[in-house]
Length: 268
Length: 280
Image 1 (cartoon, chains in turn yellow, purple):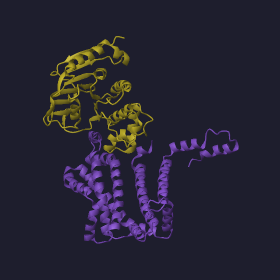
Image 2 (cartoon, chains in turn blue, orange):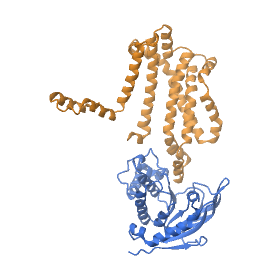
Image 3 (cartoon, one colour):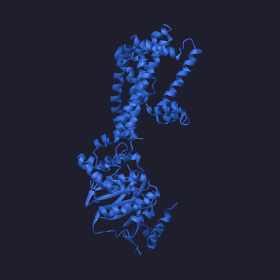
Image 4 (cartoon, each protein chain N blue to C red):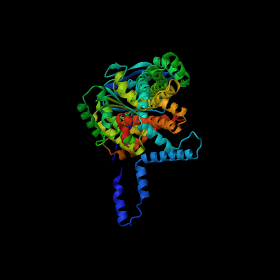
């Protein structure tokens, strides 16, 4: 069971990839006197899962929201499929840390909500929604309300809603932070299966090093105050191995340790 | 309601052996299932205390509960109560309807727009803080003693509380839900009608309930301070002839009507607007 895990540490400057679906150009963000982000240049490759990792206050969620078009940048621009974007668009879908489910709507209506906003007919959007509800493992819960579900199940609803609009890029803002540890691991495994199956580009924000190494093709380490790109790590993990094998692999643990060494200076 | 109790009773009279599953158990079981029992117990305690206080008596002007009930029944059947309500309800219903529509509308606009907030919020904060009873004579001075003045009294009490609650309801909408709507490219109108108003509904209704309660205060103030009509007239008249049981019956009846109206509104809200609340 030799899972070959090695990490290639790339220089932040040499981030040009052949097929970038999202390009971040010189993004800066100020909140009054506080500089949250400075000179961020990144490219996100199509079909890959990239993680933004860093200590709290490094602006990783802000960067994700800027890419989503939910927060305006102070300087720089975001290109999706080569075009500059200034607001939310159909090629991007967002998964919220606090799930952002409508408490008054059933699981089915929540999942179909993106399609409802686009004016797609009830029968068609419910068909699509049911498909993705099954995909995230929530069949049978279509008529439940969010408060009847556990935290993990609620986030599955959030993910199904993002899938349902068939966006190219999925932006996930600490999606598992409100989910307990056991469910979180199961969730990470399921996410990898969905990544495999749906062939979309994923941008993932987390503060968990293990989670980042476990799920990512590429990890962007951000340093705090102001948020800058400090390191880019590409853990090449053989995903065909069983999850528990990967989690015990020396290579996997070495990458975790390496990232921790890079981040420990920002702790405290 | 729960006639499942009958077989046990039949068994008990026949054999009298299963004494363990007693009436007390059944009542306890019934009480956990139906909260309405506790409402009845609460009311029964209140009425008993009232009856005892009336019999002591704590004041010659304080009738017992049973005297009040018989006075209420008498008024209900001799044709004084219903026409009185017909008169009281005119300014109340018009005033509350105007306050609800205008108040929720203005409140939502204030919640959505900073400019509307700056323009209107101070006015309603002052109006809510002002002791409105002091302004009722002013209304009489301008609008006389008719329906207009009484309706205005209702609006003066009900409108500010509805406006301010609706405004707060909109301001406290979950920002994450609004972001969610934006992220799926919802238009501003979709944002308002599919997210903001539904998410604000519980607080909107809390404001509406407070507004209606204030409307009842308004109409009673109007009927006691402007000219005695309707229920206000019944109260004033029976007090003037020292017919205290009837006076208390009129007071108790308006309290009951107000409580039932608010309970009815809550039922409507949960039944039609909060589907997730229907399931426990």
